[in-house]
Image (cartoon, rainbow, N blue to C red; front, side, top):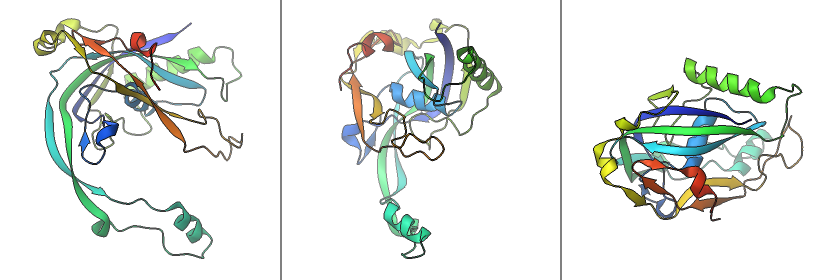
Length: 242
């Protein structure tokens, strides 16, 4: 049995970065499934389950806004952290005043999406109970209804938090804006679907108490159409491009 959900997601801003434009960030017109999976993981996640986005409904007109943001140019070096832990090396921190840079971003504003999704068992760290699938379903349902999360859900980028995440029985398609409906069938071309890590979530050392994961990953792409505001992710996922 597949346990599915329908949620409405609202935000003031969103940024689903196009990988070919990382220097100056530019958002896709619509969410990428991988970003929505990350948003759902902020509500509830266990190694035993994975989220699968089946449908995306775009309710509000697609509007962009240009902003400038302060970003840090460099990352803390892992070698410096290790060295500091052994009391041998220099301090690992970076100073934002020295490393700060301004970058332009073209982001989405006033977004409202309907997300239809389900979860599947992965077989990783599976619970002993025979009804574990039902247990996960009840936990997810309860946490969404109560507005619970273990980190703030965001729309593609941590600076743009979700303003409202609501569980619904059915979507009200009559609320899709006339502007979106008038667009008809929109081919968005090849879009990022998600980033797939080489280890597939399994520790390389097979030790869940002290796991070591791989940083190697590849991006999967698909070519979705938005028809009258609805993106049938499940259909276009069948012809995924890696």
